[in-house]
Structures are given as structure tokens and as C-alpha cells.
Length: 550
Image 1 (spheres, helix red, strand yellow):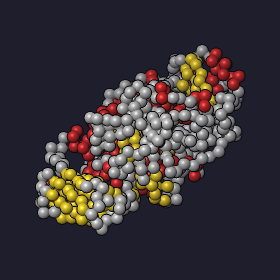
Image 2: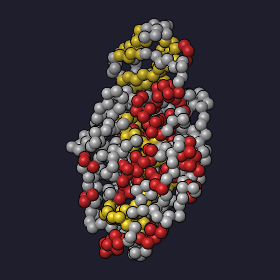
Image 3: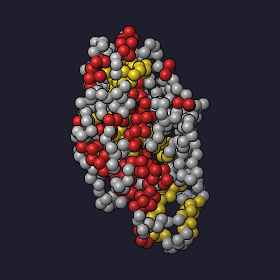
Image 4: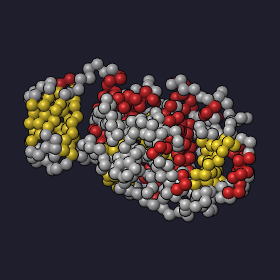
């Protein structure tokens, strides 16, 4: 099964790919000697936005940031006319090539700057198009942080999933992702520039372009219905259709990086992912979303891995994810959908260090059975956090608003809130931000292998660390839950004024006025069965959000 982590919407494309002799190789280089790149001229390989971020957080630019020596690449490719450059990793100092003639491999090993060669795939590529790996970053503007307060958003179908993370009050403080750049690493983004529900993103100049690392998919935006996973995932963050569906970072900017070859599963896809992570760093992305994961390689079974390999260091993708998190990027990665399988652990690169691996739950906080478990093989808590990944609202091509299941959808919901929180708290580093988010989660002091540290409370994280002295949340008890005829709210402060109840589509279905009674009884007999979100208000602009099931 393809490890694009989406349950209800999986499409396959047939390629001439079989589990046979290797044709793709990862070449480990020994050094970066005689490179044309220098620490003194980082603009040759990093955008100004990335350089400014390194300066702001005192992250040093080192030889690790130098691109792979171009002379080494040229000498490798000169060995055979049929050889094709597939991927590079500057952090791992590797070059990945398509090399259909295995007799060339010993010649590669004989090059003085080559340490080793690893077979990573068995693609059969015919009529390869002219293909250029994008190494030069696109110029990006520097972040501009905004905190202007505006009226509340009508989230429509997106209400429940943002309410679960207590993101509504953070948006109401004016933090909706403005000035933040989110890079989405995924399996294709069909229709983003033409679909109506993305027009606000395109017309406002917040779409910073796309990159394709797929040799047979030069145009990552128009690659057809087989490549819609990235479109669906991005919509959960970027959608901004007031009254219909609003995502968790509707004002952020976006770069789309196509790293996944849909329809096959081979180890070389981790090389594409690593290359994509480095592109995200070089363009100055603040947050990345990756709803991809790798555990088994049925189309290249000689590379299959086991639980012992889920240690954060065995995989090139996991190692690059860790580095990315340490270089000033909040890294959000789907944990996987193997919770109901015999092998139920999180996939990689969700096993990486200094990232947020995301599990899936329902809108009423119940863990999804399919959500992969932790811990990592070396005993670390995984997943890190949990978000709504069951019946999560999203857009499909064709202007189709629907839902989907999977940690693929749980991850972008959390990703958007990470961007909004960092917009509100720009003084913290990426690793500090990720720890703050973990600490806000409901099980932080007692994590488990299903939820990890639990469901984060993004407004709690904001108020705790920004130091809002007048933040005094209401202390509500809501019971019974699920409710049948009556819903009771106990307000320990005794000063409630109004209670509004919304259905899962964001429609106001019940309003109740309170006369400062500490025990409130609400008749919910008229409400259909389903999930509801309530907001309670009192004097001093104090609010609380609660959830219940009828």
C-alpha cells in the first residue's frame, strides 16, 4: 500500500516499475574539497530569508550547508550517457542517480571522492524528460509579523478541528499565519493555481511557487488526478472561504515541494524527501508539513526495514528532518496509519529528533484506531502530539468540500496552528517552539504510546509564554458527555453570561443566556445527534471553549 498517509482518498498510477535489479543508487561522497561555495557568501546557496533567520537565531552557516561539489556530480554523470541525476543531499553529502547499467557501479566506487554506494530503487525510466534539480533558492521576502485584532472568522466546516486545538482565540488575537512561510512536502498538488478555493492564496501573492523532484512529473501542479494528495493536505491549512471552510493558517504563504512518486514504494523516495527538506531550508521556510511516511518498500523489498530501524538515525529522511528542525524550521510529520496492523509503530521520518510527529484523533478527542503508535525504537515519545484526523474537513479538486481520514489530515491542521503560534512568538527558536507546543498538550506530564504528549492547546501556549497577565480562563465542567436531553455546565466562577453552541459545520444552533448561576442546565433535546462546539463568555472578555457529543 502506498505510504502517502491518506485513508479515504488513495489513487494509483501504473508505471513500468518492478521489484527487480537495482537501477537507482545513492552515492556517499567523502568530502566537499575544492568546492566553489564559501561561508562568506551564503547567498550562493541560501535565500536572503534563510540567511536572515540564521542571523536572528544565531544558527551558524557551516560547510554542512554547502551544496554537493558540482565537479563531483559532473564526474559521476560523465561515466555513462544513460545516467540520470535524481536527487542530491548537501547535508548527507550524497548524490542519487538513475543508472540502468550496473557495470558502471564499480567505476563510481573507484572515484577518489566516493565513500560508498547503496542501491535504493529499481525504476525503469523511459523517455526521460530534460530534468534539472532546483538548487538555487527563489528569493523570498522577510517575515513581517502582525498582531492586529479583527472580527471572528466564520470557519464553516473547519470549526471543530481548530477548536480542538484551541486555535480560535489565537486567530482572534490577529495571528493567522501572516508573514509565515509554510513548505508542504507531498505527492503532488494538482490544480492549486486554478481551483477556485485557492484563488485567495494565488491572488494575494502568498503562493511562492512549487518544486518537483520527480523526473517524470516536471509540472507538479498539473500532473493529473493521481497527484491530488498534496492539494487536499494543503487545503486543511490554507483554505480561506469564509462561511464554508477556513484552514488553520489562512493568511500564511506557501511553497509546494513534490517529493513523492505516487503508485510505487521504493527507498529512493527517502532521497527525494531529504532533498525537499533541504530546499525548504534554503528558501527560508518557517514550518513544513509532510504527510508522507516510509516503513516498507514492496517495490524494492531488499530495502525493507523493521522496528529496530525506527531510531531517528537509520533513515536519510529522518536524519535530514532532524537537521531541518535544528536549523530554524518547525517540522510537522504524519505519524502513519498502521495503528490497527500487526506492525503499528510510527513510520519514518516521524521517528526523527527535534520534530513534531503527529497522530490522529476524532473531533471529540478519541484516538483514531488507525493512528500509528510509539515509542521510537530508542524509547522516545512518539507521536509527539495529536490532532483531528477523522472526518477532517478538506477541499478536493473540482471545488469539492468533503472530509478525509488519516494522519495526513491531522498533520496539516496542527501545522497551521504552529505557524500562527510562531507568528505570535517570534522570539523563540524552532526547537523551543516545538517544546512549548508539546508542553501545552493535555497529556504532557503523562504521555502514552497512542496520543504521545496529547492534544496541544495553542492559546494556552501563547498566553503562558507571552505573559498575558489578565488571562484567566473559565473553569468549566461539562456533563454528561455524550448528552441526551440535558447538558449541564458547572462554572466555578459563577459569572457566565452567554453560551453559544455550534454544529460541526460551524453553524450557530443554540444560544443560551445565563444569569450568573454556577450550575447551568441547557436543553439539547432539539439538537440532532452529532458533535458540537460551545463557547462560553463572561465579563472581562473571558471565554472558554468546550466540546460535547449528542
